[in-house]
Length: 239
Image (cartoon, rainbow, N blue to C red; front, side, top):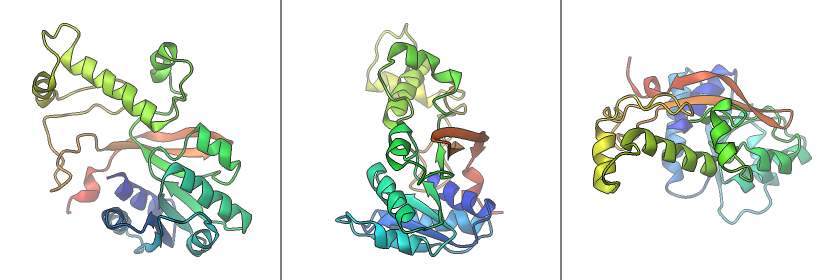
């Protein structure tokens, strides 16, 4: 659902024209629909959908097409986000990028220099510089805690420990499912509190339980947090 959040956020940021940059695969159509829904909910224009062949290695033409819009919402793997930004910088594109969660991390920003300066993303966790990650860093100081897969893994363990508890007689699929089904205020400090007893009110997305994101930005080569958690549920409701 963060695609819808990025669509709405781009509009509220002042983007007058928006491109969605996604791989040319059937599953990307859902992402394009979510981006469009978010932009429309915020009163913005319908994004131009740029379909990127999966075999693309030279992103110059993609960057040029994206550069025809004020802003581009990019749902590509991290390496391709970096390649797109670098290609855009090399041809003088002045488009602001909004990237899928995980695309803004130390590795990507190091690889792209200033090409992603000002780029934003919607993520489920507070930034890695937040003290909430201190226990993770104490456990493993050789891990890039700006990486989304590392963050997901650590947060998942914290949720498990929070919900099941160290004194559980059995930790198996049935025990975890039972514990989660009654957990209504799971707060690890890394995310907004999560209520696993209430499903998301959208068919097909009903198993999304964490609908709150924070927006982050690439600033001076680092990922910084802009504001507090925001609930994306209103983007999917009428009225």
